[in-house]
Amino acid sequence: MCNTWFRHVLSIPSGLLGASLIMFAAGANAEVIKNTEANSSIPPIVESSVSKTTVAPAVQTETAIAPTTSTNSPSTVPVISQVEPTTLQQISQYSNEGRIETAQVTSVSQLSDVKPTDWAFTALQSLVERYGCIAGYPDRTYRGQRAMTRYEFAAGVNACLDKINEIITAGLADKVSKEDFAAVQKLQEEFAAELAALKGRVDTLEAKTAQLEAQQFSTTTKLSGLAVFNVTGANGNNVRRETGRRVGGGPEVETVTRNPNLTFSGLVWLTLNTSFTGKDSLITQLAAGNAVSPANAFVSAGQFNNTGVPYFDQTSGATANSFILRELSYSFPIFGDKTRLIVGPRLNWYKYFDDNRFTSIFDGGTFNSTSSTFLSGVNRGAGAVIAHSFNDNLDLALGYLAESNEFFTNNDASNPNRGLFGGTNILSAELTYKPTKDINLRFLYSRYNLQDDFLSTIGGEPLLGLLDDGFGGRLNNAQSNIYAFNFDWLVAKGFGLFGRYAFNDTNVNAAIAARSGNINTQTFQIGLAFPDLFKEGAKATISFVMPNSITAGKRFFVSGSGDGGTQYDLELSYYLPLTKNIAIAPNFYYIFNANNFSGNNFWVANVSTRFSF
Image (cartoon, rainbow, N blue to C red; front, side, top):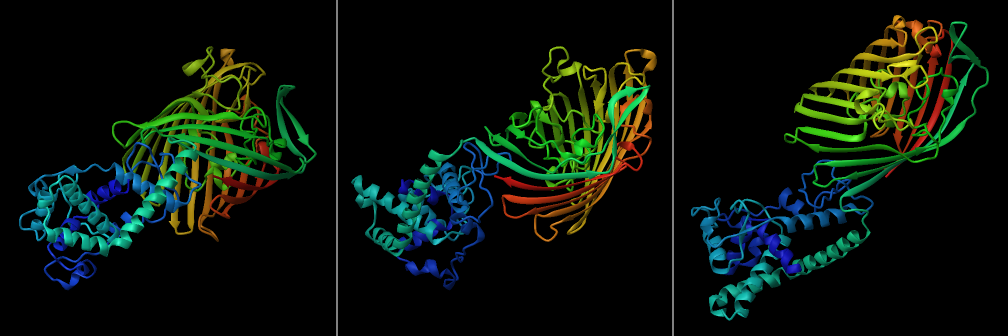
């Protein structure tokens, strides 16, 4: 096994190997390898960064190991973690060297980059044609300018000695000159320490490889996880909210006089990322949580898990403490590496649209600030997304999703009565322009078809609240055209700006046609970001949001319109990584004119601890 590996090393690393070996075989002093600069007729052998990488690659945070792919696989390739990085890199290097094909040559003229005028031509010719212990790359090149290390040279000496031993064993000893044999033996003695070290390293790597193969989770799948602890409190003073019913022709309003108690809750995501080719990715994500965030006690009907609710302070499904399928999707490249197709019965819309470098869900913001409040009521859906990169400055994403939400027990996409095209669905397009690496400008459009909720009302984004026909009657459906703009700008190291604006034009279709009409709403967000504040990887954000301003069609809102006031959210968040796998995120939110009632205020404080693996 050791000699097999040595032969791979011989054929891969250094063109200088052949010339150096024959120089020694011709009687050159072995010390030349240590001080070639003393001989002006021979180019110096320098340990470059290439040669160092061959022996001991720089340590990376994670090492990707793909069973049937090249080392240039994208980030979607499963990553095996929880093992000493240096060990994984040695094994990965060892495996890669074993996979590199070589082309055996019988004449030095078959090596296209070796010319008779090269200083090492005669040396290579002798090794190729007399002993056959030099091989080229599959493209018939030798790459003789590449540098080498003493370990690589030692491996080459051993390989040529093996070849000579084969010749002797075959009874062809007369083909090996005594001078050549003596010179190679001298080299073997000179590099005895390196040869012994190489054998020991190979034996160790083989043992560790066997251990990994026996203990690894999967050869194609990486398991990653996130666990979040949340401590959350909320406080208000006689907060008014709408119940979602009409009384005397108008929305019923109640006053919350009792503040909710402090809560301690948790959430878990488990994600399986599988790659079959190294360029594709099958995502299977499971989730469970048990939180009912205290802010939900203050909000009007139809706004559950929106205002004042930290993103991870939720159940992750219709039932607390029950695992649900949060995502199931498969992505792969089409038409080259610049286009990807993502398909599946449950795609996460927000992975492909309305991204912003400063408002990640992991930073501690609420549902209202981590994404636009209007863009998609189909948070998860069945369908497809195409993502294409024209160049470094321009990207395009197109997607169609039918509702498949983990919070609903009766999803439209899997319901034969509505299905992929007959129920609630969304068609979205986003163009991202990046004039510089520090600025992202996103232009979004969504066509949203919203069906009734089987209870005669319609609700959810982009209509924050609940709607009927204005007289307590049934709505059949609604169609929304949503236009949005989103930007982030890293102004300087440690300081950034971000913001959003969206306008929604919705046509409401009532069961009684004469009661149909039109609704217009708008939203905006502006904020400041302070990346790497106090520590690398940390981030502080200040976000000011207007979630939902109704400019036309207020009569349709049985919940969410308030008394004509306009709600504003001020959010302060800080994400602080304590270690590579543990982070803490304290957050504070103040809600002005909650539920669009003037003078209706409350605040929320949250501290979350994140564990990732």
